[in-house]
Amino acid sequence: MTRIAFIGLGNMGGGMCANLVKAGHAVAAFDLNQDAVKAVAAKGARAASSVADAVRDADVVVSMLPAGKHVLGVYFGPDGVCAQAPKGGLLIDCSTIAVTDAREAHAQAERAGFLMVDAPVSGGVAAAEAGTLTFMAGGAADAFGKAEPILKGMGKNIFHAGGAGNGQAAKIANNMLLGISMIATCEAFNLAEKLGLDAETFFKISSVSSGQCWSMTSYCPAPGPVPTSPANRDYKPGFAVAMMLKDLLLAADAARASGAGIRLGEHAASIYQALSDKGFAGLDFSGVMKDVKGGSAG
Ligand code: NAD
Image 1 (cartoon, rainbow, N blue to C red):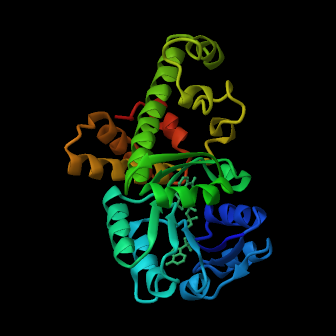
Image 2 (spheres, rainbow, N blue to C red; image 1 turned 135 degrees about the vertical axis):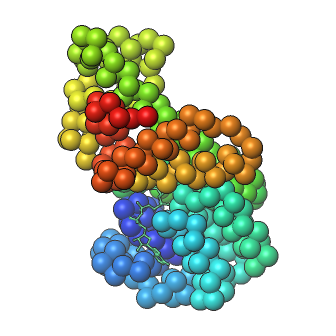
């Protein structure tokens, strides 16, 4: 049993925190939203009244927060984790944040006497609840070695992607590929339909041909072929346009900083941005199909 402080109990963090309790850890949980704290307290976590209260005797701190500014504030603010937790502990940040913010967090954590791992996830709310997330972790080998058994309580596939920030690098490169491939899949289904093929027929052919990809076979954006995909419930998320846009903008920043060319990644960001500007930020990202069908994507 490990003493864990969990900070950030939103759509993802709530289920992840509950799974750590289920795995037999003593978990103290904190969120600015009291209802979120009550929900995990009902599942066996200790309701903490502040970050300081949550981390006061923690061996490990796990966080699942919206963005880099929240992560840096929670860890390094005056009443934050590093000022309040016992020195020598392990910090695991599972939020999706900029590679530069993650590397800054690692450097500050090390200076304050903590081990750190950036461990963003692939998989949505359902995987967070089921404990089947994929974690891609960045950090020193000893930090990863200590984090792995904790991450196993919340996920199925755990990868060590390399040093500080490499978890975030893997995450945004993967999600950029997903964002692009989803638009390409929508365009292919729309073109096939305009040329006289129905979605089922095109799916049968392309899903076993060279155009096959995850966006098609697991998450088909055309209604019909994949019953579990959001296309069959009018693109209710799932993984919202706003989340995809966030990840593509992080990828664009990281590409600029590293000199990597991502022409399609930037174009994909502009397509999701346009969808968001039209009021569809809350739609599943496969709802880009609506835009493609309207003929305005791109
Ligand atoms: P969310 O907004 O539902 O949850 C974030 C929680 O953090 C909220 O409950 C909020 O009150 C809390 N919070 C914010 N500032 C805080 C502070 N200073 N102290 C304590 N709590 C604070 O977001 P989410 O959907 O759970 O996503 C969390 C992270 O996971 C994001 O970085 C997101 O990009 C990433 N992610 C989300 C999904 C998804 O499908 N939702 C999938 C993969 C990765």
